[in-house]
Each structure stands twice: as C-alpha cells, then as structure tokens.
Length: 426
Ligand code: ADP
Image (cartoon, rainbow, N blue to C red; front, side, top):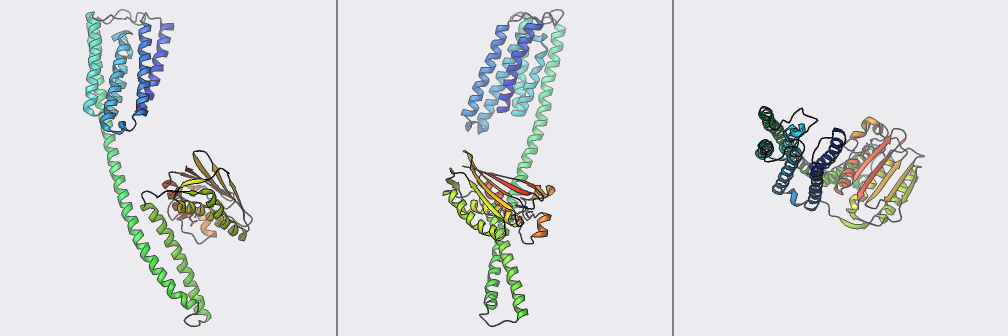
C-alpha cells in the first residue's frame, strides 16, 4: 500500500515538472490551470490515502478492505490520468501509454479477474475520451507544435492507436498477472515449507529435551554413586583407583554441564513467549560484576564497568537476561589472556538499553564470524587453547535477546579483541 502511495508522490511531482517544462519550453496552448488543478487533486487524495493507511492500519490487514482500498486507488489514478490526457492533447499525447503502468500495478495488487476489470475500465476511459473528442462532445486540445495537423479526427490514426492501446493493455495485464500468479504460488509454497520445517524443528527440540533429561538424570545417578567412593565414605582407595575415579568425576561433570546447556537452549526454543516482569537492571549488573571481578582478578585481567546513572528498572525475564550477559562475560574471560582487559558498558539510549562487552582477547577469525551464533559452533583458534566449551552459549544468548525483541551484534579482530553489542527495547 505504502509503495503505491510513494509512487504517487513521485508521479504528482513529475506531472508538475512536466507541466512547467511544457508551458515554458514547448509552449503548447493548453488549459494549464485545469492541468495544475488535476495534479493538485492527485496530491490531495494521496495525502488522504497516506493518512488512511496509518489511521486504519488494523482494518487494512483484512484482505477485503485492503482489496477495496487498492481498487479505489487504481480507479482514481486511471481517472486522473484520463483527465490529464484529455486536457493535454487526447489521442495525440504519447503519455497515453502510461495506462500500462497502472495495469501492471493492478496485476500485482489485485486478482487476475479484478485486473482485467481495471483494464476494461482503462479501455472505457480511453474510448470515451477519444470518441467524445472525435464526435465533438468534448473539446480537443491540440498539441500544435508537436503534431503537424490535428489527429483526433483522423479515423485511421484513431483506430490504429485504439487497436495498439487495447492489445497492449490486455496483453500487459495477461503477462503481469501470469508472472504475479507464479510468484504468489511460489511464495505460498515457501511459506508451507517453512511451516513444515518449523514443525519438524519443534518435534526435534521436544525429542532432544526428553533425551537430554534422561541423560541428565542418569548422569546425576552416576555422580551420586561415585561421590561416596571418591570421598572415601565406603573405604579407602589406592592411588591408581583414586586417579581413575577423579577422571570419571571430571568427565561426568563436563557432561552434566553440556547437557544442562543443551536443555537450556532447547527449553528456550520451545518457549513461545517469555513471562516478563520488572526488575532492577542496575542491581543485576552490580551483582554479576562482583562475581566477574573475582574471576578476572584470579586470571590477571582487569574488569571495568561503565553504567549510566539513569539505568533503573527493566521489563524482561530476569534470569535469562542475566544469563545472556553472563555468557558473554564468561566468554571474554575464557578467551582473553592474562594481562588483558574487559569492559562492560550499560547505556540508557532512551528507547532501548545498550549493553557493550568488549575484551582485548584472541578475537574471532574473520571467516568464522558468520557461524559463531550457530549451535555447537566453536572457532578454530579457541579449540586450540580451551578444550572445554559447548558452543551453545552464544546461541542461548541470541535466542534470549531475540525473545526480548532485541538485537545482538559482534565486531572482532583476531589477536586484538572482540566487542558484543546488545540492544534491548525498553
Ligand atoms: P563456547 O562454549 O565455545 O564458548 P559459545 O557459543 O559461547 O561457545 O561461543 C561460540 C564461539 O564464539 C566460541 O567457541 C568462540 O570461537 C567464539 N567467541 C565467543 N565469544 C568470544 C570472545 N569473547 N572472544 C573470542 N571468541 C569468542
């Protein structure tokens, strides 16, 4: 809808410019006041359409009303064009073929039947003007310096142009509606495939959730069996037995960590809508910073927080927002060598909150940047230095931010550092 309105602004300005040019340079004797008035009316009704689109936004989502609105616009446009043509030479005016544009627009917006109906309306307007001028019911405004002699009463010329006009209009509608129907069909197919994929993804997530749950329970059982042995509650162990069991405990813990991350992302994906509530974002940042400061100190990394004083309460799912920020900070800690620096900035941008996490770490290789938000993806450079990692943290973070209608971006340079930027609408 807005596309057509935007086109009409351009068309109206085009008409004004063309009239100024014709009046001053081509000097045809035409009723310019009438022509300017028609262009003015074009601007006015376009203004009304512009206002209506905003005012009746909800109503226009209904196909019935949207269709009526499109019909109304195209019909008025055809009438304006017919009037402009009549007052500027009628059949002599080469702009008569601009009717074709309206036919293409109709074919895109309307059904095939409705487009042919508009084509018939265009032909009717054309025939009405041409015949009326021919018969002398309407005056003819001759483009005197453009054509050698008046053509509106030349039967051969009128019937020739009429034939070309008629066939062009209908052929254009036929071609445009065929292309448009093929595209609409393809779009429908794509939507169906998309829906099927979403359903399959949902089934897969539900399955992963069930399996991960079972694995987690079994792992917890294994852990509870090993613990009394490693803690020597059930008797002493020799060194070899102790070492073997310690490895088993370590591996079990890593597996539990991985399964928890998998459960986390799967649950998030299956949640259609988060239960939002108000909480103090400032308090949350203070609390999580305390934890990060301690971890950063033990690794010889400096950690700085900049937070705007206006940061107060925020509406969201507190646990998830905390998890998203923590995931990014934990990554910065993991992938920044000793002596590095991590900065957390929280800015109040009036309509949204901007959170920036910057580190002077190992960075992300440029060719791997497009993949880092994919599930299980870990870049080559981190796999060398940090064996542990699920490749799920960033997917969870992205899912959380998107569920809050926010955005997440990353800028990184290998060996220099990484910056994650989050935008959360208030
Ligand atoms: P992981 O468990 O491997 O940290 P994530 O999903 O959290 O998984 O991150 C995915 C990948 O993105 C990481 O393996 C790493 O390659 C890259 N990455 C994320 N954050 C950083 C960072 N701050 N510095 C360098 N690389 C990062």
